[in-house]
Structure formats: structure tokens, C-alpha cells
Image (cartoon, rainbow, N blue to C red; front, side, top):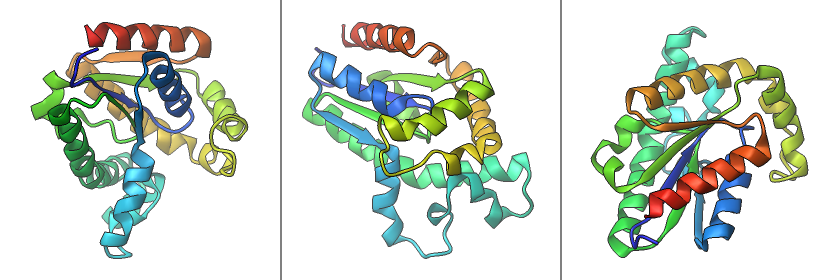
Length: 200
């Protein structure tokens, strides 16, 4: 294993980031797995109540005007700048210390990690079929988020998928690997192989 191995897995809620990150960590003996949601939550007390970071990402457009695609993505990017500043520092520290780590995050914005992209392994998870995506969101309480019913999130599926489309486009522009997690078992196997190859 590379002494500075860091795996960054992006994706909106419900695509399997948490469960697959845990699986890869167990299979590869990686002891540190961090969630972008928890990084964001830890930052919130340090910002004013009316700051964009204190909104749910699907409501982040509200500080920028009407509910348009442009304002939604603007809110997503503005939240991402703050969360990813912390995420960037964490990954830099892991690289410097030689601590293998997995970070799974909604805020998959490659431009925010431009200067360390060649030092980390990055992949984006998505679900192509919207109905399957809704089904997975509604099921996630059974597997990973035991006290967080997915129905609130599936009710905002349209905005999540607009964010997903933005990150897919950014992945393509940066020639980063994407995994369509329609078949969970197959995707888990493919992403594990990708992670192994990244260690070489």
C-alpha cells in the first residue's frame, strides 16, 4: 500500500458512498474513513446561522434568489468551498503523515482539490435510473443511516440529481472514474479493484 494513499469517493445521498467506503476500508485494512457530512456538521457552529453552510444542500439556492438550476449549483459550490477547504487540509495531512484514508463526500468538486489531485485516488458514484435512486434512498435507513429516514431526501431527488449531473460533468472534464451503482454487488467489486490499482 502507498504510504500516502487517500481515496476520495464522491456522490449524492443514496448512491452507496457510505456502505462501499466501509467495505473498501475493511478489505484493504484502511483505518480512517471520513464523511463529508460530518465535516460539514463540525464546521456549522463557526458560521452565522444565515450562512449557506447551515442550509440543506437541496435548499442552498435560497440565498441566491429563485429556485433555478443556476442558483442550486451556486449554493452547492459555495457550501463546497467551505467544506472542501477543511477536507483538503485533512487529506493533505494524511498524505504528509502517510496515513491511508478514505473520504466519502457529497461535495465532489475537482477544482477544489486541483493541487493534490495527482496525489489522491478519486472516483464518483452515481445511479443512472432515478426510480432506483429513490428506492435506495428510502432503503438506506435499513443499512447505514438507522435514525435518518430517506423519505426527506427522496422528496428532494430532483435537486440531488441536478447536483449529481454537475459532478458527473466535472468528473468527465477531469478524466476521473465514474461508477454507475445500479448493481450494488458488482459496483462494490469494481470500486474495490479500482482502489487496489490506485495503491500500486
